[in-house]
Length: 292
Image 1 (spheres, one colour):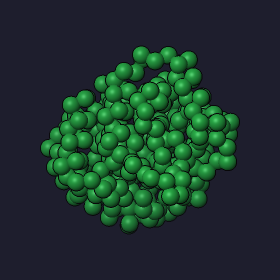
Image 2 (cartoon, helix red, strand yellow):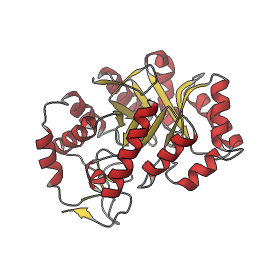
Image 3 (spheres, one colour):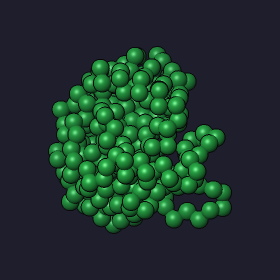
């Protein structure tokens, strides 16, 4: 398994993170099988959130026993200090651990949400306090949508976050405004040695109303191995990316791991040919155009 340093954090994490949103609505047996598959293939970077359904509970039986061997990250979506502090300790209890390696402010994709988190009495104060108490080791921030790069750049001006987590895929980076904002964020993140971790690498498009949904993801994912390979190649070839989260469905996870294990076997030109020729490839966040 390809490993990459997580910014200024002294840890070599697997290039693919186990995106534990996939465990939100599965049985414990299904969760255990998926986690064991990850561990067997060298995945040591696990990313969950308090609001991913039962995901923290599903991680607990195995993760609590091997915590010293992995990098464990979770998130709080609360916006006030008191609410966030309560949720942090609830996450620890649910996962049966005494601490986590990374606690992230979750879904901060606009300046408005950032203002809530960084205001006096906001959630950031809870994370700083929890770090001082030794129950979290590092503080990060995550965000969805087209404003995430701009928001996270401003976030790094306000606080030295150890990590940022935001969308990146071939289509989104083809949008000039998103590309410019993402590049600006990468430049600042490199200066601060902040780890840039990405999501939605294999997202194809929004689901169409009434369409059959064979996967648990809230968007339509790619599921052909060749296209997944190209998507993974794109994000892992991107300079400075510390890693990417797998899609939120346990059935897609083995294909994504397989693509990472074969990373380097596809050329940039081949990935470009595959991704540029996909009909219906678009953003899942509401941009008006698509690559046809």
